[in-house]
Amino acid sequence: MRLNDFSYDLPEELIAQQPAAVRDQSRMMVVDRTTQEIKVREFKNLPEYFGAGDVVALNDSRVFPARLIGKKETGALIEILLLSKMNPEKETWKAMLRPAKRVAPGMTVSFAEGCLARFTERLSDKQWLLEFVVNIPFADFLARFGRAPLPPYIRRKKGDGRSSEDMERYQTIYAREPGSVAAPTAGLHFTEDVLLGLKRRKVEIAPVTLHVGYGTFVPIETETVEDHAMEEEFFSVSPETASTVNQAKRVIAVGTTSARTLESCADENGIIAPVSSSTRLYIYPGYRFKRVDALITNFHLPKSSLFLLVCAFAGRDLMMEAYSQAIESKMRFYSYGDAMLII
Image 1 (cartoon, one colour):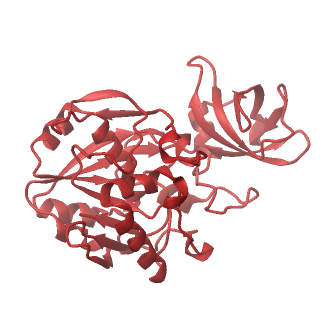
Image 2: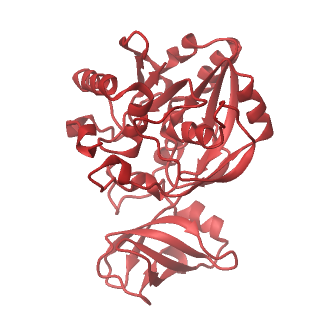
Image 3: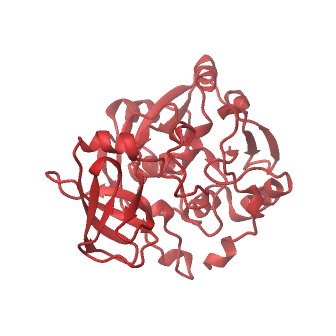
């Protein structure tokens, strides 16, 4: 399959730069795969679509403040996105840089209160190993100076201060397990009222964990869909969640991360096994879903692995029509944008 067949034109003004004023008052496009019907509701209407025997699987991974703004020796600002800790005894981290030019081993980046980071090794064009030297516990350093790791299409100036709104809103209300460098954004629409509404309708809530890695920022660069490879991400499914999911009449995945988690540990009969492991599962059209029956998601970038996943779930033609209607209706796109429910 050609990657260009999964492209569409999006007016830049539809890329949401701020979250909805109230989480569950974002709009929700409902796409019915059986009837091909497409309608627009509000996210607060979500519980109406489910009932007894349904299980909603949501990703409880917590975003940590992985974005740092430091000052190079030249005085220029540089943005650092922490990806993973590489040494359990030292604060040595794999990180992405922006901009990544004019950086060399041995150079340092300074932060407030005498904290600094030293570039130790180039891993790729944009990835480096950094060793941090801080005079407070590293968790306190991140809590004080780290920012929400917003994706590049949400524009924030490097010189702006830490945003308390982004720290709160680029996080689901049910986030528990720290480890993600990007939010599982389909869950950003949930409120306690929505969760209560689901429970009142006898819907079970089943948490899974997938720590979203830097691969979510990496575009597909191959001309053919099949040649792309996903980055490895850690996931975990508890025995309790496996039991709940295995007894479900329908399983509704909240986001592509929950969908990939469930599909990564389902056998050919759709039975989920409790496991803690890592996955590179790449879902694109032609994939047969074994466990996921419905999907709550956001509107994704063209030619992205996330858009390919929803096309695999609902069919390319139906998704292209849904996205065309979303653009015509001026729905808000990407991480801080509106939601889609595919049933």
